[in-house]
Amino acid sequence: MENSIINNLSLIQPFNNRSYLSWQFAINHVLSRFSRPVLFITVFLMFTELTKQLHSHRHLTPEQVRDAVAGLTDEAFSAEEKAGFLAALAEKGETVEEIAGFANELRERSIQPCLDAATRAGAILDVCGTGGDHLRTFNISTTVALVASAAGVTVAKHGNRAGASQSGSADVLEALGIPVDLTPERAAESLQQHRFAFLFAPKFHPAFKHIIPARKLCAERGQRTIFNLLGPLLNPARPSAQLIGVPREELCEPMAKVLKSLGILTGMVVSGRIPNKNAAGGISHLDEYSNLGDNLVAEFGPEKNVTVSTVSPGAFPVQPAALDDLAGSDSRANAEITRRILRGEDRGPRRDAVLLNCAAALYIAGKCPSRSVGWSFAAEVIDSGRAFEKLLELSGK
Image 1: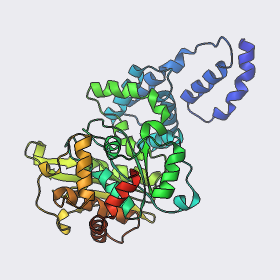
Image 2 (image 1 turned 135 degrees about the horizontal axis):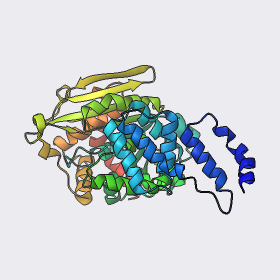
Image 3 (image 1 turned 90 degrees about the vertical axis):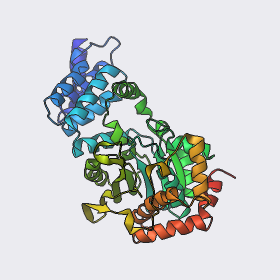
């Protein structure tokens, strides 16, 4: 058997420029060709070695990121090993290069909808937050996505069910009667015919089933992981424009740099301030544009590097409001909030929050020349009835 293994080592020649850990994967691949493979214990030490490296505050190389993703999506490794690695990476602090590397590797493992040439040639928008602000607002970005589609923008909304929030994008869309379990083929058709499709993350990322147990372990221990950041970066439709909200201002610029490195043409990453007497420093941060306080924004364009600025809601006709005015609840209650906004019945601070985020979304999608024009256009789309008509169209009513 040993001679047969040696004769088959030529199979791993393509790996000769890869890391030592990639050699381990390659050798295991060769051994798997035999009915009684030799067990190389070293391959099961992969996360141990990488975790030790992270504990010594040494960053991962691109090759090690590839190895780590291969291991995370492999059922051969235990949830405990994976959780230990993810915790060590978070404690070290993820670099822009590491986040981009993980996103690229995981995107390659996703199921991509095959879009028609006309849809692919135009702007494709996604609007979402990373979550994690724990402020229990209604589904702002999902409502924004519907208004943007009604405004004529093709929106590929990537999301999931509720995690830390009361109502995830899938939950509220389902409560609105919009299909959330589209196959890749039906998603492509919906984008072409309706300028909107919801891409339910578990359906398009089958490899994640081997990561979920480790993420649950980390969550039970109160440990955030890189996956708290990756969700919005993994849209399988590969949008050309993206608005992402993050719950910490220090994430804006790094996440914008990651987006640009992934090939997004125009993007914004925002963290909105909200006065909150119960929060440290009296300020909480919303993973959306805030109509209650200033917003730190990192943005870029096709020929524009990432720049960081502060956008005040005072530049728009917003009404005085407090955090309670943006409160949400479960999916049924949030669906009714969205309906009232789209019907033009709710004209208070919730509408302002939607218009403010729509202003940015329409701007980066190339639909409007500025955020101020975007605000007015979004208001007209709602007031003309087009936003609610879009909801009826998508829900088949």
